[in-house]
Figure 1 (cartoon, rainbow, N blue to C red):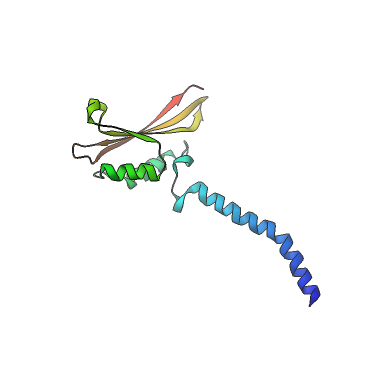
Figure 2 (cartoon, rainbow, N blue to C red):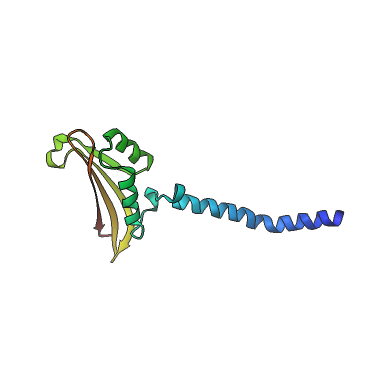
Amino acid sequence: MKRCFVTALLLARAIAPFAFGCVYMCASQAEAIGDYGRIGARQVNLSNLDAFEAQIRHDIPRGTSKKAVEAYLVRERIPHGFADASYGEAGNEFYGTLKNIGIRLGFEANLAIRIRLDGAGKVDVISFRVDYDAP
């Protein structure tokens, strides 16, 4: 009986680092891809950009209220600002920027997100643009 206990204890000590490593690795992978395969703002890169844009278009459909858009941007940790109608042509829009989503030809890529609201304060158009900055 003692021999089985000692063998089980040695086996548990040998396996434990791998088991805890697997739990840690699985948790890290889950954090990297976000909840249920969603792409978090910090995980956006040039490879998954189209999927991230589709995710935002799905989450913020046309007609979504200004308050709901603000809550979404805060919840998803997307750095943003709002320009009210006093800015004229460029007004009544949320502006968001995700910095350093990749590098192409030595230039840093940044994603600019614009969410334009209509006169009633509802989402009208969502646009995305990748800008490149010199290092």
